[in-house]
Image (cartoon, rainbow, N blue to C red; front, side, top):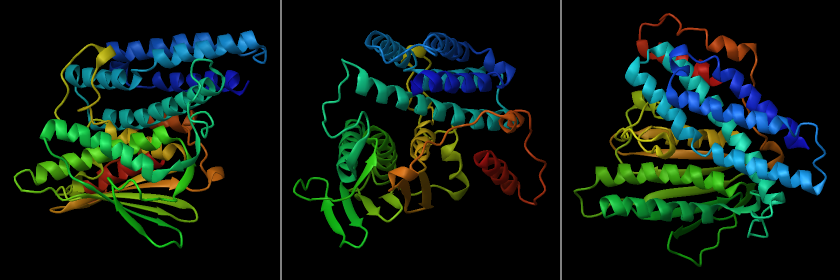
Length: 370
């Protein structure tokens, strides 16, 4: 009953915001396709708004509709990214347009994360074909999510990709600290090591974040030490405090210049080669530069965050912050209102500092606060 009311509202909010995008972007074929998906999904959901979903037949129809909607929107991230690339190639993108697109994509993708979270939770609880095999889970939520297990799983899969491409990969060292307990150090291959750090969380979200950060760290470390006999290992520290659970991934991949630290969270910035143009249904994600921005949204969705600290010439620390207390891990959602509307109509402020860097930092930080 909650979803019958809530999902149409969330779809309507983001559809209203799509219409505030620059006119040139709205005419791009990929953006038009995304808009048609949202319009169709809204029409399908609004039919259930006043139905009695307690009846088994209605519940079955509603669940089936949600599955179709989820499948329809499976390529939204790649397709919207393709639309931005189409705009860049056809018309170019100035600083004001780039800021508006950055602001929109943060809100658009956060909305998508929330909608998929609600749909996945419903289908796992009520769908006959999607029962979760793990009896510990409540839908897609693990009340006792073992953080080190997710870390090792993400590392192993990232390592597989790294070895495929570079024929080598850095090892992993993990140190865990649970409040006042003594630290426990073990390698990824130590199966007997026990890590008591557990939180209420969605393992798939945490895996997505870790997998992306491990890929970046492995690529940096491997390329920086490619001509050496050994690659320095990745170091992971997991610390559970009273309010925050922190996961720090440290690499020795040469670091990032300080002036570029903010750029890595921009959707139109990527150090990987730009992907080749292809059919939107199979558009690749790698190379769009969306990995880190999306990972940060996943962390922020439940009031967490991702922070990067770089030491140019040495390496980078990526720190994931998560909420320990589940009652504090509320959804962070974009709100469509007059303030949001004004952002799409405002330009970058006039430079009132001697350094252009200060103006760029101010415009980025102001958009982030909004």
